[in-house]
Amino acid sequence: MAVLQRIKGTNDILPDHLGSGIFRSGLWRRLEETSLRVASLSGYHEIRTPIFESTELFVRGLGDVTDIVKKEMFSFTDRGERQLTLRPEGTASVVRAWIENGIGVSDAVARLSYLGPMFRAERPQKGRYRQFHQFGIECIGGGEVRHDIEVIAVFWNIIRSLGVSGVTLRINSVGCPECIPHYRDVLRAYFEPFIGELCDDCRERHRTNVLRMLDCKNPACQAVLSSAPPVTGHLCGECAASWDGLRHGLDLAGIPWLHDTRLVRGLDYYTKTAFEIVHEDIGAQGTIVGGGRYDGLVAASGGQAVPAVGGAFGIERMLLAMQAGDPALSPATRPRFFLVQIGDGVDDDIERLLSGLRLHGIYAMRADGSRQMAKQMRAAAKFASLEVVFVGGDEWNSGRLAIKNMDSGEQDTLVVGPAGVLACLLERAGA
Ligand code: AMP
Image (cartoon, rainbow, N blue to C red; front, side, top):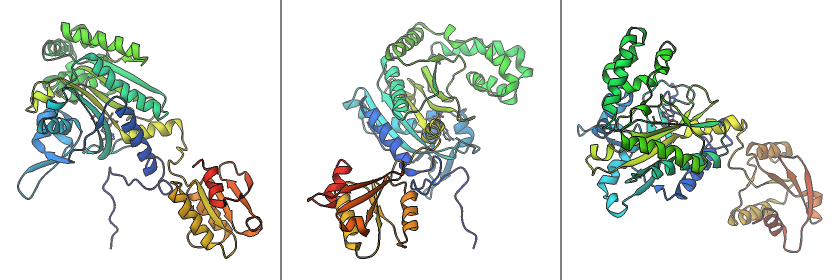
């Protein structure tokens, strides 16, 4: 019978010692825990929403001219003839939950974080998957520019806490319904004489979503696009003040930024601040974090007209960025002690030690199967154990403990005190 395989564009994330590259679950857990912890320092706490929602939610929230809604959603009809979609992003669901649970009544400014799988039918490549994972935060009700800065700073701090370097924060403004219609006209008029030289996508966007033309990556279009008039010359008074405040606030926070005049968000509900954090060397899919202000979404989703700002990063891409700085990406989970048995008659000692160590919160293992020394040492290495403790043999019988550090290869001999072997190992592990 043919062996069934996972669907293209999806991944299995294995235990650290079995997986390779970024697909090791200990690394994922480390990244997730760091992200949740750093976000919580600014008051962002986790909300969990369903993985599928009504299709209507995303069509309304994202707008039916965006690529996601037009061609990337995994939608299906359930047995009750309901139109459902696997969530392609997190914001629409968080806003729905905010409305449905009346969160705005108790928290005028609600700070929420989320984490989990998202689904988009994109062409898979390195850094782009059909099931991918995001960590995101939303500040719903936060209408001041300091909220934009707070959101960007959370992502900046997560990146720093994970030790990722080589990233650039790019910012722009995408205006608001007051000033953007005028800017759209300016852009449309600018592109008009060049339309014959541009790609099919650009020609279509010229009619449907002219801002997105700035986003085009087609080499043939670049010369025309890079000379397009920047939005920041066409902002209304309020958006211009917000744009000034954003740059000033980022300077105060010590977060370096770059003005990217062609940064527009693919989603229709964004207003004012747009930002991305890009990594220079993880290939074509270098945008790790994307976000911005979306003052129009909550009202468009049937809630009160409250301002909001947020963003999200792709977990896979963040891990690729970590790997770019540390190609070996040391596993997050490694046994503190691996007990290697020498000779017979020490089985009970080993089991008693393992129980005692684990009871004190220490990750400790022994080999399964063969008692051959080489095989036990190989097992210790496979789990990336920190230290091997030899149980049995002459040293053991004379009240000494031989311990080998698996990173340095150095061996130590400890004299076991009157409190016994367990106490000696606990002290060594600082437990
Ligand atoms: P977006 O929701 O499109 O603003 O995306 C936010 C972030 O999610 C991006 O910067 C990527 O890091 C990540 N992302 C988006 N789409 C994918 C995908 N198909 N595969 C992997 N990561 C993705």
